[in-house]
Image (cartoon, rainbow, N blue to C red; front, side, top):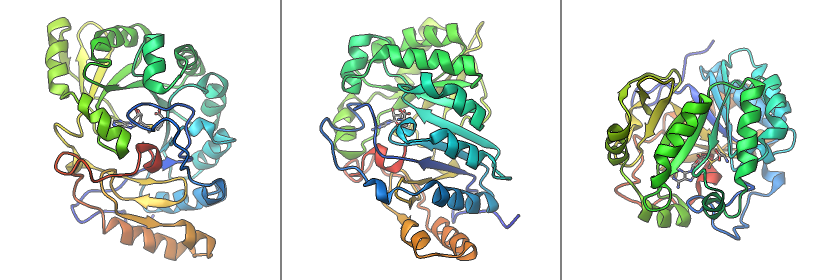
Length: 328
Ligand code: SAM
């Protein structure tokens, strides 16, 4: 094993979020605008061979966690095949997936067989009409069926990601808590980030999760809790249940000082921070035949440029790309 990746702020980089496509079969109001067509051309997507090469290089430099994301990763043809190839890399310990769940019913078992250990599923509402309004016409039943299939396939833990929007779905948080208690899911509440036009307009529905936490304390007995692999979420438990609730607060209390990740977009741009524009284009290098040693040097040089923190709060206009572009 070679020396690990440590950035200028002494953060060890151990985690790659890998976007396999920027396309999505939903149009969540805070993520992609309706009618958006400016997607990466498929010939620019990294091939499975290219992805495997890059991830292999990362794992030989100390990365041991990879999350498949997008866009909607389950829309990428043969995703379980890619998952199996990545899972076979000797140093990769933790392969996970973020999905909207729409196609999960069909793919849950294949993903589990391929080595995906755990999944995060986005779910902002349990009301069919509201779910359709938030997601640009999505069918709630499909996601609920997908969640049932994930449980049956043995994907564990299943974490529900709920973007909390004031006046849109914040009245459903207690219902979501009960839904997750009943199914042994973990719940993660997320503050809306100003990414792209959609994220910025959705930011008018921004709600500080500290307010939500105080509200939950009136209904439930919250107790301190830890969650292995919990990432940036700060967790509490609900007494008398197995439920853990994570609060992801990029705006009210950013967690950049513990950032351990970078993001690889579907077309091979290595983004060093979700909320900054710094990136290194790996695709041209791969297609020009870069050797493994030079590829690793390029990755090391990129990590040496990782910004200290995002500026979502100070400069909300800054990030014009949508979350689906960088890989959420
Ligand atoms: N399609 C997959 C999914 O639904 O999980 C993976 C990609 S999606 C971009 C990843 C996560 O980013 C989702 O939980 C989504 O709700 C979240 N997201 C997208 N735009 C956001 C924004 N502006 N603010 C906060 N979260 C956002």
